[in-house]
Length: 456
Ligand code: SAM
Ligand code: SF4
Image 1 (cartoon, protein in one colour):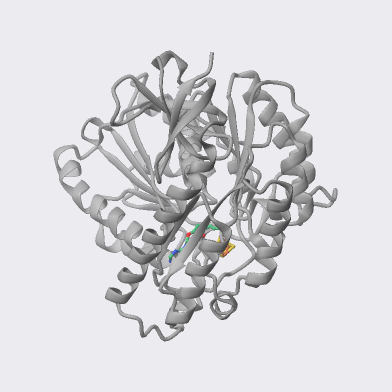
Image 2 (cartoon, protein in one colour):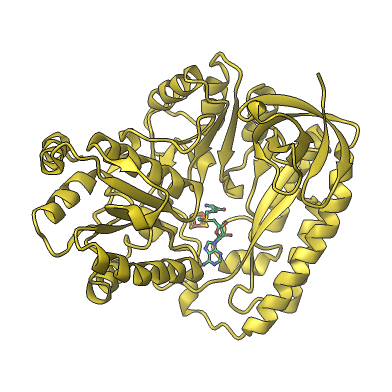
């Protein structure tokens, strides 16, 4: 853990009462967005203000994602285009943070090929930000901290993007080493926060008026395995459910190997826990799951689904899927279509396999052409569209509790929000309702959302 106080004071002196404008942009998952809020929190302590326009910024921090190659390429493109900005304003400070820079070969590449970048900072080094900035302000050409395992990031002050939805990381890292995935290499091993720290944070957020608390972890339901007090994720949910107030709790992502009956029971028993489970299956083929090192079979996964659906046949499930894993055969892909038809997910998040340097799958033969992968992806989305448009009809006539979160894009005077089941709901309403819970009677179902009228 870094002691930042002295560095922050020195930076403030350097800023001499000026209020530099910082542009912070996060890419990727909700954990990355949460890290970005911590970066902003630290910059706020140093006296920075914030801008959404990189052209007027005195400091730019890109908080990156490394899960797929196209995410990395996008960031390299943006960093490249920032060369011009630096030429126009040589005092501009540019920093790259997050999962990309936690890979030493990427940090090296940035240092060598992008001289406009002043510092890089890995995912576990957020607390180093004041020190890195101070080095830049003292004239260093390039600074870097890609060290591992600094849990201080859990208690860094945050400037949150929303005033009614807050994410709360409950654990960091991953122990699973799925063969395609870079996460364990860039976020280290699993470390759970102490339950009391989480409970205190959630209580404070509820007191501040937050309506949705999203508990985060790469495998959120593996929470507690490294704690000595024996706390488990279902127990944590039950503890959080006791906090008084009008709010709901979501959590993401759950690994199927740890999706126990106790987890399902906690979801049903806890009144504040949203009635939705995101359970990434990745593939419907046991052979592919084995080669992915997922540690469950389709049969085991379906046991969990069946248990949940016995308690509530309409329960909402969503998933992640990878298309075109190395040597995925036609029959493997058909098995994936089969599982999405059997489970009837309300939504799927599907990705074409992306080769990640340093992972085991990167060494596997990959004879499937990009064209074939693209065709499979289109087919998967087509099948899911059919499932959703049929499955969403079950909500017609029901009243759904919805947290209104913004204006609908295409309908003037309409709002959009998510229901407890994580379904997009559109309805006519005044923008003063944004950030509030409303009851919406569903009258119509599309294949991506449902719509209805507010019940007074
Ligand atoms: N820990 C979660 C789990 O096991 O389900 C998922 C976290 S991961 C950051 C989010 C999703 O990205 C994964 O579920 C997977 O579908 C996708 N993903 C990860 N690595 C990928 C890769 N190399 N290519 C394509 N998709 C990938
Ligand atoms: Fe990646 Fe697998 Fe860990 Fe999820 S469980 S973060 S997919 S290695």
